[in-house]
Amino acid sequence: MRVSDAERQQVAEVLRDAAAEGRITLDELDERLEAAFNAKTYADFEPITADLPGSPGAATGPIPVVADNRPADRVHPEDIMVVRSDGDTVVRKGRWQVPRRIEVRNKYGGTRLDFREADIPHDRIEVHLEVSWGGAEVVLPERATAEVDVDTSWLGSLKVDADAIPRPPAPHFVITGTCHGGTLQVGHRRPFSWSSLFGV
Picture 1 (tube, rainbow, N blue to C red):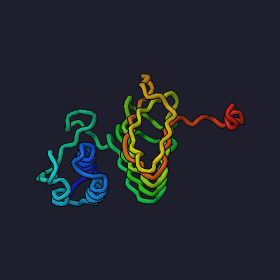
Picture 2: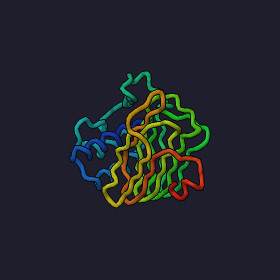
Picture 3: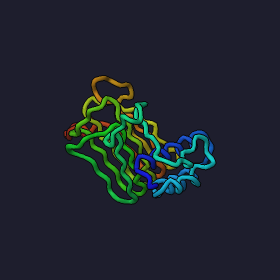
């Protein structure tokens, strides 16, 4: 049977957990993520995760996907947005519908997620970024908060200009991922003024 994008994402989460636990190296993680995102059938998953605990690679049927700890039968396609690109420019801005979880994989490219004019029906939004060797910017709406846990340990840089403690009813963003050899900025973009330009 052919696999869906949601099922590819579930396998990707298994791989990321395995790397966080030290079961596979970062190089192995990159290789296996590449294979997972290119998988077309369940058989393609098996060699990717066969040596990991809780492996879904041996599944013989559709894998139930769970978002935000809700039962699988209540998950809707709009709960997850997946964007994959390599070396291109990825932009989401203006009026757009924000799902509960966004996953962007765009190595060597530029990524910009602008939430200022977006429709955000959720209190908590998860954003997972794989943007190594490129540049990424997450522009938050007014009063929004952001908890950022992104690995920039290998020649990466991270700048966060937002409070981490949630302030309901303002939306709270949980941003994770990897940015090696690249730059990631998270914060509020304030209106231009000459005084701000000169640091006044």
